[in-house]
Length: 207
Image (cartoon, one colour):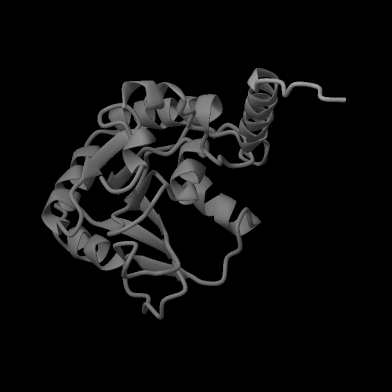
């Protein structure tokens, strides 16, 4: 197995980082603005986020980007039919203080990479390959799926500590620049393919 692992190169799909300029310093004034982006509200853990928000010691603003018919209420804003890389979506990332995705099942959602590109700390569930981006204590926090109490605890910890939120956001942006720039990663894939071609044993010339 060890020799096989040496032959594996992991390159994330990434996001167009040039379209996500380095974020400005957030003001930290007012209620914590929490952003959630998930068309499939149930599978992406939206209900767990609503339950967790109700357990927080202080109110938050939830900004939910989803296709689900979720009703707005005090402290909950819903945005539907936003396309990838749309200007409004980028504005929501820029205005948020924290990105939360308590998904129940996923591989490596691009929305997490978008949040990191926007300089946001991320709280997500430890499923799929999410742990390769969300590094506990550095770029955000990981919680178990289907656990609103643990999710509320993680949100509350960052709700109380703007300094840590900002530090995590800066680190998240740095990791996005290093690992999740789609233009750079496309070049890495091309370079890898060229290397494999050059390393391929040449067939004997029978002509």
